[in-house]
Every structure is written in structure tokens, then in C-alpha cells.
Image (cartoon, rainbow, N blue to C red; front, side, top):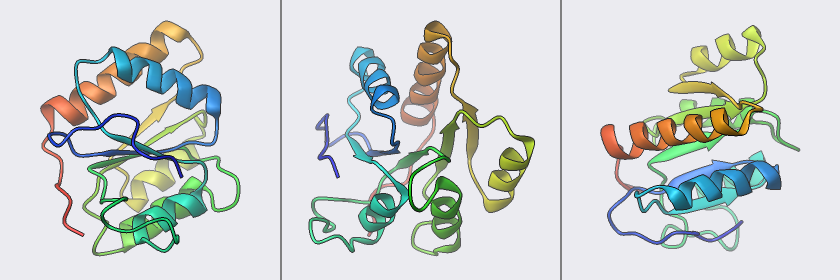
Length: 155
């Protein structure tokens, strides 16, 4: 579990569940270029994400791991995959109001359909082109952290 990389009392936090260091570093690079000060937590796999969300890890408590305003979730994770993380979040009364956006390389129609049936709030395919990736991330950040009203920490 990685502590917040950007500190702010204004923005709800973003939980990024991503096992690829390269993808996460690219995301952070774009985030640093954004005028938005968004606190970011990262989990490397589904098990860490669930421990973060349920405060079951010995390093995780509501003060150090508050409820996120948005979860950016990769589907293909080691151990508990993103599909199962999404299922658990959307079946939990305390968490189901937290928006979840899938950010993955999978363009499989079955994955897309299954995620929307589970209650995902958005599904984005990671573009391979650097400029398209930057635009996708900026669009995501602008919408969810500048336009949309996100839930505040309530756990």
C-alpha cells in the first residue's frame, strides 16, 4: 500500500488499483501536470484494494485510508482480480455509492457488459498511444474531479 502522493483537504481521494508500475507512473505524470490537487492512493492488487476499503490490513485504518471519492480499477490484477473487487464493492451497502471506473487493456465485450451489469460507473480502455493516453486521463480527471460531485468520506 502506498501512501498519498498528493495531499489536499479539498478533493476527495482517488484510489488507483493498478499492478503495472509503468501505467501508474504514466498516470502520476499526467496527474502532476493537472491543476487539480488530488490525493492518490495506490493498491497493487485486488487483495490490497479490499484491505484498504475494509480497513482489514494492519496498516489500514479510517484515518490513514479514508473512503475514496473515486476508484480507478484495472481488471487484470494478480490474486483477486478487478472483476471480483468490483463485485464486492457494488454489493456492499457502505461502498456501492463510491464511483468505480474500469481502466484496463481489455476491450472484450463480455468484460464491458459484465462490469456494467455489476454497476460500474465507467469503462475506459487504456490507449497504447501516449497522446491518447494523456487525453483519456485528463478527461477522466476533469470529469470526475472538476465537473462531477463525488461522495465525501463517510466511513
